[in-house]
Length: 258
Image (cartoon, rainbow, N blue to C red; front, side):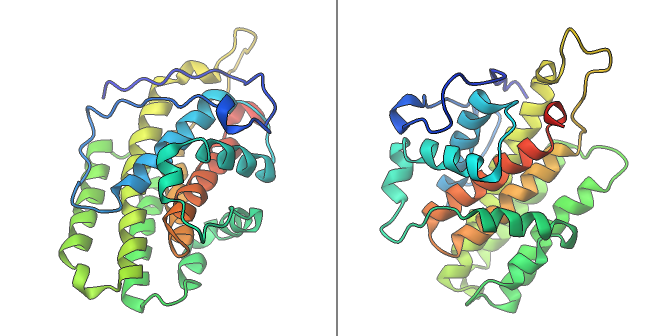
């Protein structure tokens, strides 16, 4: 991978920035091959644009869940692509949703999946298979190979597309949004943690805190669970709930803010 993200340790503006004060960041995807047959691929791409803006400006800030959501909503509403899919039925992310995810972490987010209305047992089982792969990988003694990990997700995505007739339109939207975000998210976080090691070092640190390798997997599954919950409402909520879950997991696992 050749992707390198430039990150600043702290922003100088208030967390209540208006949209026009937030600069949209560009991400290099030359090493990433999205499945363009997935009509919800844009959910993953928008998700990455938002989290990249967040970590560029707020990477080492100590933030509450409410502050994280406020920042994510501001970044999203400054993004023209997001506004074009936001929808009239859009509702802002609730802090209770993020807290629900935190409380369901030890259960592999299965309670969140089981709580989805109008979703079949078949589709819920497929969603559980997706998140379980993340948790199984995080429990390994050694870091999984990223390319093998993405290959699993790409095959999962293709299976959903091939079997789309087995699922309702709502179920297809949740499944395809979730796996698209899973792929974009793990691509982003795997590269971010590997290429920004200096972000967790300081000249004054005798024993600088370090990220664990499994952080990219755990943050990735948090993103995916957030999208699953949000996609049940509409695509816009899928983007911001996934981004809020992602940035909350990123912030909560940051050793510099412990």
